[in-house]
Image (tube, rainbow, N blue to C red; front, side):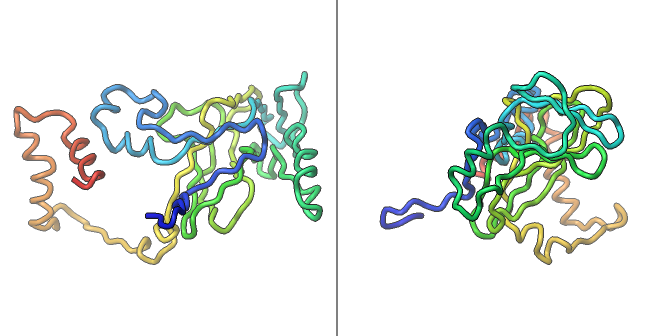
Length: 254
């Protein structure tokens, strides 16, 4: 709770640097309307995973074509023919950056698209910077439970956005050769999800155990299985979506 008229610090702040960049959008439980109706109604794990985080978009439509070896050609709005990709600035952004940045930072505008040394790999800037509260990072990944886009995969990464303040880059690998791979501006490009760093970097996350056979299940574990699976299955009047309803009550502290 904030006092003395001060607003609470937001968990995550998005900064738009490229003027054409699309504002991030909170992901929703229907995965943008792509979930089957039954999954949206009754499968709370799928709903919660779909809504966890924000969708981030590209600032323009793009197309890439990989020859299967070392060359990637690309095409964008405002050009009339394909060209080989090396490293390119967003149109007009370097001038905007130099007109705005402090004197010692002029000439250091982030590249928009860059071909990487590994065949078929490239890096794209979303046009955004991101900052999170101390102790929080961002998991950057493909959109959750949405139909996969053809011809590429996004590399998932964890970024310490509380200390690393800079461009929200996305690395991807082209999987289609000698055919155009299209990336659309108004389709979610990636989903970013806030995580406490201690969740993935603490010593507790490396602790695990393994129960090697069904004979080793304890009476308490059998009883939990009974409540979770057996009793509901025996109930002829059991209503669908009971897990979802219970999960939502827990989420609201009921």
